[in-house]
Image 1: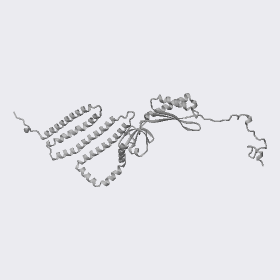
Image 2 (image 1 turned 60 degrees about the vertical axis):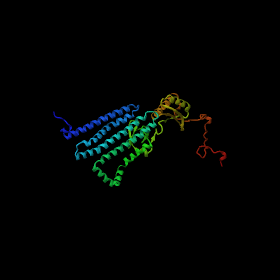
Image 3 (image 1 turned 180 degrees about the vertical axis):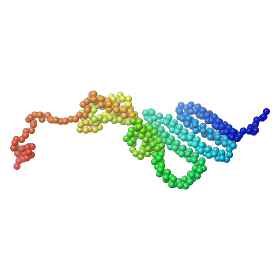
Image 4 (image 1 turned 45 degrees about the vertical axis):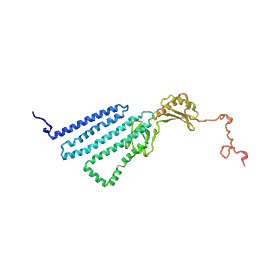
Length: 385
C-alpha cells in the first residue's frame, strides 16, 4: 500500500493557499465567538446595561479585525508573487484603517448611548441629565467626524498616487486653504459653533425655547443645526450659530419650574378679597400646582376697569400652561355665577340731585336785559360804567 506523507502530496499551490486562508478565517471566527461570549457573560453580571451597549457595538467590527489579523499572520505562508504581495499590502493598507475607524466610531456612539441610558430626562428635576445628554451628543458627533476624517486620510495615504497628489497640494497649501476656507465658511462656522455650544451650553436637549416667534422643545442637536419640536408637531431646523449670535428665550435654562400668569379686566368695584379666596381654592385643588406659591393682585388701573393678575407656579412649562388655563376658566366661571357685578361696566352721569327742582333751575334774563354776550348773562350794577 502506498504510504502518504505530506512531502509527497501532489496538491496544487492554490489549493494549499486557499485552505490556509480558510483555516485562518475559521480560527479567527471561533476566537471571536469565544471572546464575545465571555464578554457578554461578564457584562450580564452588572446591573446596568451600559456594558452590554459597548459589547454589542464592538462585536461586528471586532469580528472582521480578528479576521484581518489572522490573514496578516498567515501571509508569509502563502505562495504569492510580487504582484499579489503588492496587491495584498495595498488592500491591507485600506482595509485595516477602515476596520479600526469602524470600531472607534462604534465605541464612540456606544459611549453616547451609555450617557443617554444613565441620564434620565423623564424625571422632574432633569437639569443635570439634560446637560450631560447635550454635551455628550455634541461631542459624540464631533468625535465621529474627526475619526471618520482621519480614517479616510489614512486610507488615501496608502495609495501612492494619492500620496503624491497630497504632496503637490501641500506645496500650494496657502492658496488651497484660503479657497477651501472661503467656500466652506458657513459649514465651518456652524461646526465651530457646535463645539462651542457643547461647553457654553446655551441650550440643552429637551429645553423649552422660543425662537423666531415659535414655542417648542430642543429635540435634537446636530453638529451644524438644531431641531426644535414645535408644540403643534412641526419641526423648526435652526443653524447652530443662530443660538450663539441672536437672542432667544430659554424657559428651562436653570430650572424647569415656571411662573404662570392669568390676567382679568374687571370693574373697579370688584371684591378682590373674594377673588383671592377663590383662586386659593382652585390652585390648591389642582394637581398641576407644585406648591411653591400663588398670588392675586391688581396690577393696573384704567378709568373704566382694573387689571387683575393671578400668578401661579408649576414644575414645568406644560403644567404651567395647563394650570393657567384652569385658573382662567375657574375665575371666569366664578365671576359669571357668583360675582357678575365684577364684570366691567360703562358709567354715565345723567344729572345731580336737585336738578329736577324748578326753583333750582337758572332763570333766563328778561327782554332788554341781555348783556354783551348776547343773552348769555347780565352785567352786575357795580361793574357798569
